[in-house]
Image 1 (tube, rainbow, N blue to C red):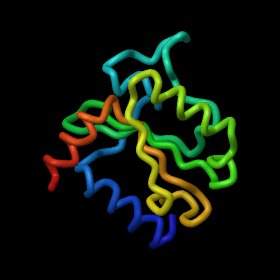
Image 2 (cartoon, rainbow, N blue to C red):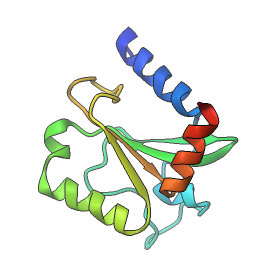
Image 3 (cartoon, rainbow, N blue to C red):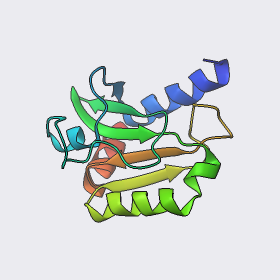
Length: 124
């Protein structure tokens, strides 16, 4: 990882006070669910360079860092809309990705907007 990539990743960690989860990367885990066979939401179509992040030892944020071209596709936008329809809060930061900065987009998926706001406020 380059110096720029490390800096951006550290900024993300500091912004929310998160630690990287070392087990299975699965969206359903931010709802306290076990990663199991479908029909649960494991990931979404178009997710790339994924990671799962913990707060106080519990998964709270699923991160994807797709390439900009893929992110802008109608299929990717439809997949993210479906994630939002399921009640998750999706935050997009076009400049926050540490995986190939400038070529990828940071997508944060939180259990809901309240969870996102409470974690953000706790760090501020």
